[in-house]
Amino acid sequence: MTPTPTTRADADRSRTGRPVACTIESPLGPLLAAASERGVCLLEFVDLHAPATRAATRRQRFAAKIRHRGNAHLEQLQTELRAYFAGERRTFGVPLDASGTPFQARVWDALCAIPCGRTRSYLDVARQIGRPTATRAVARANGDNPVAILIPCHRVIGSDGTLTGYAGGLWRKQWLLEHERAMTDQTSEGLFDGALKAGPRSTR
Image 1 (cartoon, one colour):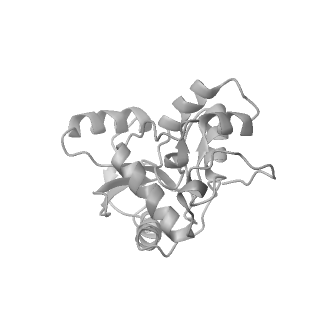
Image 2 (cartoon, one colour; image 1 turned 90 degrees about the horizontal axis):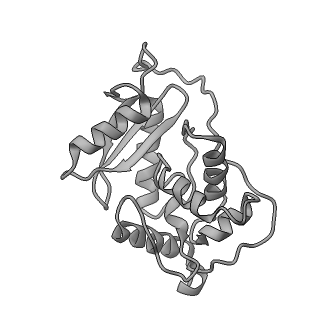
């Protein structure tokens, strides 16, 4: 799911290069989505009680106000999310344009390698990227993920099996995990299996 250039025509593309945004309805409440010309750069749950905080976060992240319009990436995202929430899709194909540090990018790559219906611990992810003592830094990078669901930070739990934190709220994290378990027919034991299986690392 590595962000890649697209040649698809986009009549609504911003001439200034600023991301464009839209709101997407979901069973867990509305999601704010934004996309650049290269791909989806933001997907977060909308908490109606804190609009000022959301706006400040968006301005800081993109260094400019995003415009509420649509583009081809957002249209593809809405289609894929509808299928995901309907239990008909486990993976996403829309290009991503998640901006972060090299360390964050490595963590987000590792998150994208966690299969739907499975979980990993922060320690598992730290080992995956070759930094076994960096669990706190991994947790911070996990929390800084700008693209919820597509970069599945909800699949990371505590080493003891507890859900731990989630920016969208623990109830949403629980819902997402149970939803994915149902899609993949995983048992609770399989869902909360923190053992990291050896194998080649997949890319976004």
